[in-house]
Image (cartoon, rainbow over all chains, first blue to last red; front, side, top):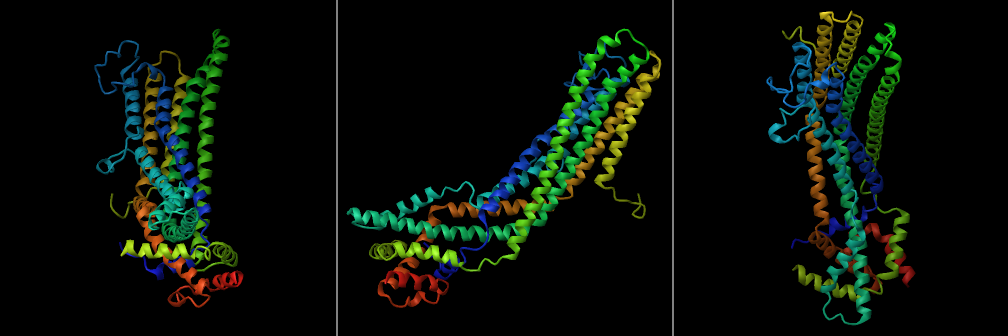
Length: 338
Length: 144
């Protein structure tokens, strides 16, 4: 097995306590994932809001959504008032399907997929990016498990370690190794994270802006739905009121209640869209902030006084006592890796 | 359209257009609602309103498409970065890699321990461990 250069390793350890705050990056990644998850339901509602809007067209609910291409549909009977209306509504439903019905975007349909599907694909790209960044920053990484793995790995390196004292020493040696390996791993994480985040900051911004754009488009879709709702409930009410229709008083409470419910639903969706835009703005700002920090720091800044003191205390406490067992470990490790 | 007369349309302009079309559709329905029952124009106006709404919705889908298609390169770079980060995470998690690192760490620890035990200089490690000098001298003094 190829040996890691000691020079590289010592450089890593010396620079190990860089100012890349992995927890901050983990938080950013979590925020990115939460935001992209919220986008998913809004993008799916592109189709639903389109359908709802069409369903508010007069007589629309009498036309079946299924078989919309079949002119000989058995459901088309005399209840449908005229052909122009039928054609207009069928066309509207078909457009909803073509423009907004979500399909999975793959390499083979990337160019032909509809806009809503492509928007979800773009959102997934951003979501996956944040998951990867989070993992790189150590999210979902079980340090306890890592220590145990390393301690277990050290165990067979000692031959004839039967005494309790030796076993304790081996465990302690494994823990020291895990501690140092953890520093080394964190340095690798920090180093790659700096490279990743600083080189993609502009791209993240561009993608977030595009997704925000599509949320604004969604808000206009909701505006269209609201106009249809007003026409569906409001115009008949005005008419009946103006004509002193005797049924007006009877139907008014029912219609007004349904109208209010529809408006409340649209308002809730508008609020969600605004919240999502705020989340994207915050994400963009925080990504920029982490990028600035990473750009300004040097990963070779060395150990701070506090970090030196901590490392000192740990080494002072354990290293000297463990010298014999570590020598033995070294000897056996060299044999193993020769 | 010749290049001279070609203009660039923005997503914002598309959105504004869609909004205008939705409003026009509503106004047509409003007009239809004021007509006398049985007027054949009612149905026509409502149908045209439906078609205009459909057009507005389609314009919005073009706006989405424009926004998304324009950032394909940036998206591709994010995909590359994601793949790279995933690869590094796998590497870090790989036990073989950890052992490989730990083997070298062993050398380092042994070097420190050896230096402490003899109370002397760190020999071949000295040049490499300059940054740890302060730490080691403190360890030396605290253990003496």
